[in-house]
Length: 349
Image (cartoon, rainbow, N blue to C red; front, side, top):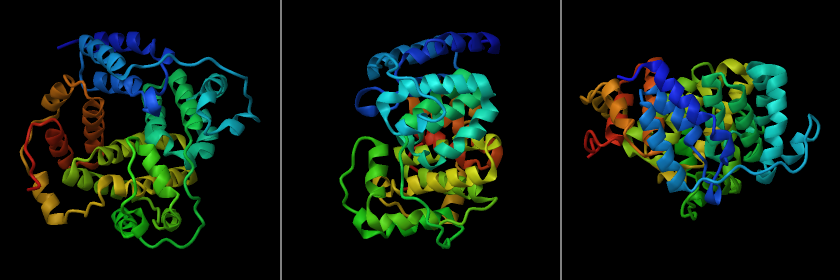
């Protein structure tokens, strides 16, 4: 067993080079390496495994060097380049100054209200990078993440304040699945493009107001996410589980209104992925309960297997699911990871 401090030293050595790599590579795919290396370390990956993963990821994805700044931004001008990918270097410079000035908590309290409505940026991967920066309490990482969030900001239809129709996140997805024009739409390789296209369908506009957000909304979302992923093992559903973990990491750093906006728009973005998910039906409670009683290895064993994977999503899910299970206690988290890792067969048949 590698001593934790030695593993962390190996992580820090690798992370020191991460700012030099672009936040995205070809066709705007998100660079997961800075976050997944942290997840790999957290699930017990040895320094050699971290190096092996990064070397493979760097070469397989053909990571690009980060671009150079174009023009300095300040507190008044940064909003003028929101959603402009080529200005990410300038945004990074701006946010680095703000993190140095304010620290993580104050900076997030100041800037998350401006960024909350764009939480679907890079299909939630800017949220991911922010959450991992918070997890490490690293100002540089948070500055990089906020710049990425601003540069890839993805606007969705704004809330109109119409009365909500349900407290159940699953019902929002079912109602979205009934929107006829969403069916048969062309799907892209990138999740954020599918979110964008679905959100441009006029009939989709009211979705953002359908959910009544309350104190238990995040827990209900987590249960819905887990059931959908358990039923489908779909790549997009995996991002619902991990995305809620990332929001939970940011929760202590934003006020209630901002948290509610992030949850509302996050779920709006998930609803926009119903076509990507194949418009799945929610499994009934009895079926889900049967699944959660399937015998699978414990977390240390599964973490050790995930740590050998070259698939960034295996590692991300293994870490986030184990963290979410600490909060919600649902053993189905272990079952879905076991199936993702190929340790059990398809229990849905």
